[in-house]
Image (cartoon, rainbow, N blue to C red; front, side, top):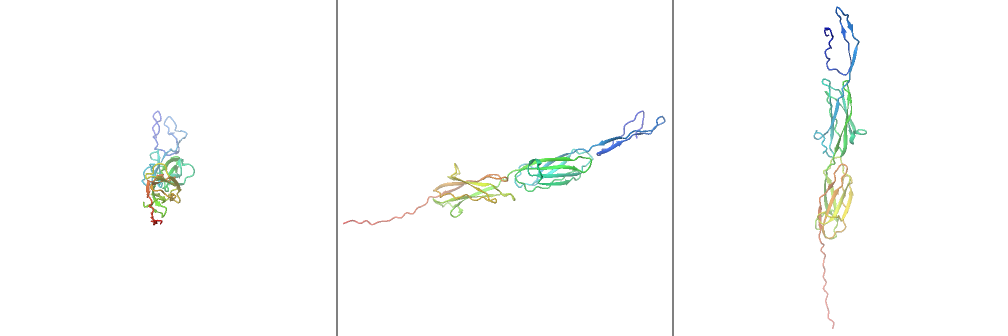
Length: 293
C-alpha cells in the first residue's frame, strides 16, 4: 500500500519469481473528493530459464580429463554440469548419458545411464567397458523436473583411444630338431624364425600377421633372400617356413608385426645366426705296385 499525494507511485519490487503466471491488481480506497476504484487485472508471465549444459570425458584410471594418450583397454566416464542458473532456484530433474561407439553420437547408443540431480548437481555416468582403439563419444541431455528451467537437448563430446604397444620377441630355431639355433650347425642346415607377442591387454586378442624376412649377412641389410607372412591364429604368430638348406656363412632374420585395430605395428630386432663349414671325411687307400719280369 502506497500513499497518494497527487500521483500514484509504483509498488515495491517482488522477490525473485519462479516461472509461471502472475497478475497485479491496484485498488484505490478513495478520499473526501474521490470515490474508491479498482483497476482491471494486469496479468504477466515469467518464462522458464534456459541453462547451459557442458559435458566432459574423464579417464577412469586417473579421474582426470581424457588426454587422448589413452590406449586400448582404457575405461572412461562422462561428467555433465549445468550453468547459467538463476540464484535461489536449484534445478531438479535428470541428466541422461549415452555412450556411442564412434564419433558424433550417431545412431543407437551402446548403453545409456540416467542420473538424478542432487542439490542441482549432475552426477557422473557409469564406466565404459575396456575400450578398443578408435573413436568414441558421450552424449548428455537434461530433462527438467520443475517449471523454472527448460530442458537441454543432447550435447556430444568425442574422444579417441590409441592403439596399444605390445612387445615382439623372436628366436631362430634349427629346423631339424626345433631347438634354439646353437651355432654348431653346418652347411646344409635349415632354420626357421618363431615370433611371439607380449604385454597384451586383457580381453583384446591381437589379429593381423607377422612377416619374417631372411637376409644374407648378419645385419638384416639389403634385399631379403626370402619373405614369409604368417597370419595370427587366436593371437599367436605361427613360425616362419623353414629355409632351404643353407650354405656356410652369416645370416639374419627379422620379424615384423603389421598391427591391427587395437595394437600398433612392431619391428623386431635383427636375429643373427651363422652356418659353419661342414667337415668332410677323407679316406686313403694304398695300393701295392708290382714289377713285371
